[in-house]
Length: 222
Ligand SMILES: C[S@@+](CC[C@H](N)C(=O)[O-])C[C@H]1O[C@@H](n2cnc3c(N)ncnc32)[C@H](O)[C@@H]1O
Image 1 (cartoon, protein in one colour):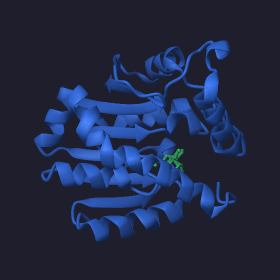
Image 2 (spheres, rainbow, N blue to C red):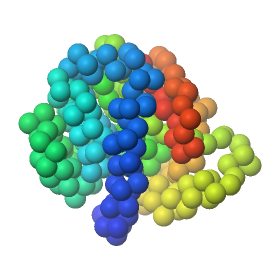
Image 3 (cartoon, rainbow, N blue to C red):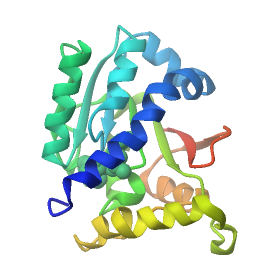
Image 4 (cartoon, rainbow, N blue to C red):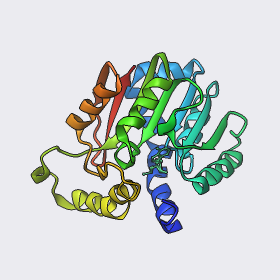
């Protein structure tokens, strides 16, 4: 992970920042009213694999009562996230920590999010277990994953080509480099996610219908 060129991290951040700034609060949260209510009530929120922290900055701006913590295994991203939160004026309510979340989260939360993280993980099941264990009773886990089919022959066209490119450049490689599962960008379609979530102890997985060529959103209940 540390060997990747800094452009990889910068490119990822620029790609996903558009979702966090323009879609997360405006389009995605209205589709998950139970989660949204917890944010409005001022819950404790964690973003696991937070990268440069953009998602929590958007959430903190939209939900002034929340306090939030971002965790990521990549220290330079955490430092960038801290700077971004300070610039956005939310550093008093949003903090970031370098951590391999598979080892467990140090606190419990009302809402936990991951945005394109599980398919990259060295140990996707271990990561889901850690998230499940850190959810408070009634807590919600919002999991953004890739919009793909479990039939490889259906994953065609320009978006699939782009996603397979990401996979080789980053998603699969970063996991295999640590002896991990190497699911890759298109390696966690809905049936595979449901199976992992069940093993991790989640009682419910809801596919949140939305029109998005890149991603699928799931709401998981402890
Ligand atoms: C594709 S990036 C997405 C980053 C961010 N969620 C976003 O939307 O920009 C995946 C991130 O997950 C982090 N990650 C992967 N496995 C992790 C783990 N076990 N613990 C903490 N962070 C992890 C990586 O360091 C990377 O920053």
